[in-house]
Image (tube, rainbow, N blue to C red):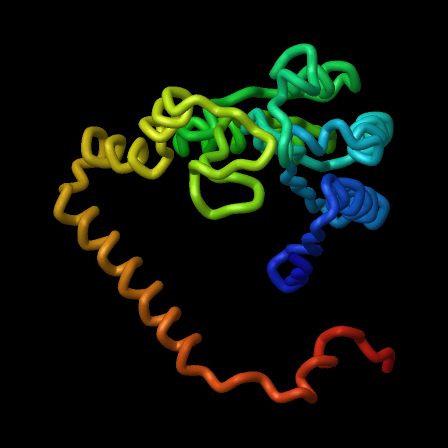
Length: 227
């Protein structure tokens, strides 16, 4: 949960809800101040919008015209609460509207729609050097504290609701699109799936066979020494 990869433009993830959003805004501010012509992208969930730091991030980005795209994955659940228990309506774009930020809402389970709307907003951010906001409606299959879809502490969901969203699975939708619109054969998709599963199996077996880390590895990469 604490990862960073500056080489690929990933400036960190943390387990605190919404905590990466002001970091992304800071990155956008630095880019603008240094005339780097770069943009930042911040991903977060619908419950993060209830954090004061995220609200101030939207306000700050709008007020100073910062090149950043805010992406909210609206799956209707915080850790243990449905959105109806926290908000007057499920549309989170209202926050973008309140800060005068250009925004779009999409079916988050439709990869093609997400791609097209993201591209449109990214072009806007690059051209205007202003923030934009993308809301992707989706759904969380699993519980917050368990790997099964039938265990979700504090949340009551109907089997009908869960079944409906499973039928909207984004991977299946993309497969159907490729078969119908890109002349991709179903046997080709099966080969792709098989290759992915084989790669996962090899990685899993490799991890099981790997030697246990030595004690002196505990402090590596924890602190960076100044030159």
